[in-house]
Image 1 (cartoon, rainbow, N blue to C red):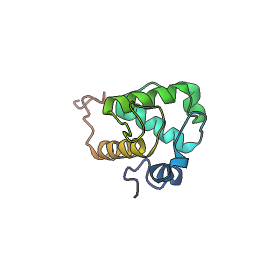
Image 2: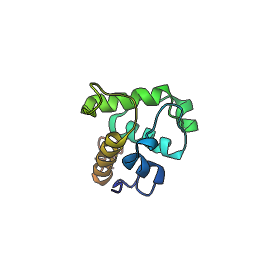
Image 3: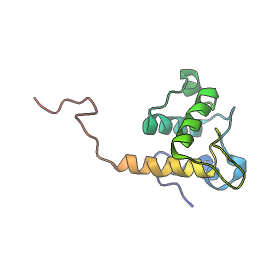
Length: 120
């Protein structure tokens, strides 16, 4: 299974997250792949993540809170062992982020709502 979005495609760590439980993103994880997930959360849902976590590409408390909000909005729960959403980026979460991001990346930009003047 491969990631579809331009943002995530080719990132081995995020691909591993899609297929391996041991590669889930949790508190304390850091790296460029965390920055990509943070960017996706901000882009898709306009979620707030602490500047320090963004600067250091660290999965800290505000990133965990953003992940939880993303999952609650979409009711992403693995019913085989969960009764409610958690703040971990696992297989189901990375898949949902990737699919939504792939769609958003292909969508035309509405210049009027993007704050770009379209008239002279």
